[in-house]
Length: 112
Image (cartoon, rainbow, N blue to C red; front, side, top):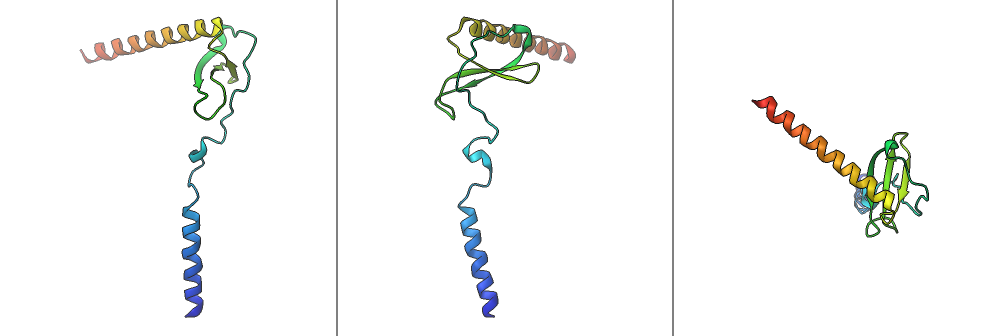
């Protein structure tokens, strides 16, 4: 009986201790998240850009940056202060709006 009580006590204490730790690594942000620490000095040709993400200094990383994803699945860090970055973002947003409008038109006409 004493052995069962000891086992129960150990199990209970272990459960309490384990519950104090986060269950997922997302509690501290994604483990594979790499922060930009500097910006590229070379503008990317628009044709190689597949998409982008925004990095905010108020979140996980120390600097504000735009992270361009290339067709080769490379990540390139850039500053929004650079003219080529602002132009690329405007072109990407325009392309997204166009795709969105085309998608809505197909959706509407498919229902008629």
